[in-house]
Amino acid sequence: MQSLGNFKLPQFFNYPPYFTLQPVRETREKQIQLWKELILDYCRSQKIFIIGMEEEFPLFVNPVIDRSLSYESREQFLNVLVSEGRAEWMDKGRKKCLILWLRIQDWADCILNFVRENGLENSVMTVEEIRSGMESRGTELQGIDRGVLMRALRLLEQKGKVAIFKGSSADDEGVKFSA
Image 1: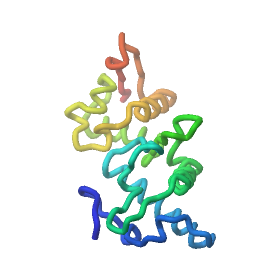
Image 2: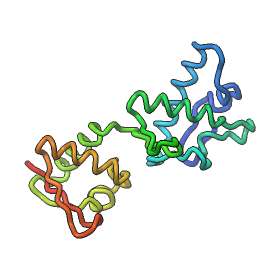
Image 3: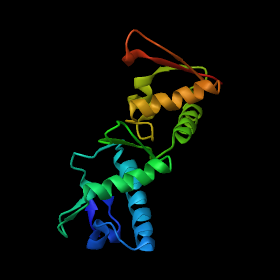
C-alpha cells in the first residue's frame, strides 16, 4: 500500500479514473465521497488547515500512476466539503480553502476536554500556550490554526465557558477558563 510520509493512502489512490471527474452520477458521487474522506483524514493526520488551489498539494498528485487532479476536480471536491460545513473558502477568488476536519463546535468541545483533562478550570492561558504549550503537546490542539482556535474560543465565550481578553499584541491574548 502506498503512503505519503506516515499516511497510508487508500486503494483507490492507485486507480487512474479516480483522478478524473466521473461522468456517471452514481460513480461521481462515490468518487466525491472517497475524496472528501481522504482530504479530511489526510489533513487531520498531517495537521493541515489550508489548501492553496494554486500550490502543489501532495494528495492531489500520484506520480506512481502519473495522474493528478485537475483544478476543476479539486475545486469540486473542496466545494462539497464547503457545502457540508467541513471547509470554507478564505477568499472570493477561491484560491485558499480552510479545511475543518473538526467543525468549530467540535474544536470547542476539544478545548473543554483539554481544560478538564489538564485541571485548567479557573486558570488563564495565552492563545499561543493553547496552540503550542507543554500541555497541548500530543493533543489535537497542538498546532491548531489560530483563526480556527479563536472561532472556537469565541463560541465558548458566547456560552460563558471562557473569557477572552486582549493583550498589547495578538501574541499575548489570554483566555480564562470557567469551572
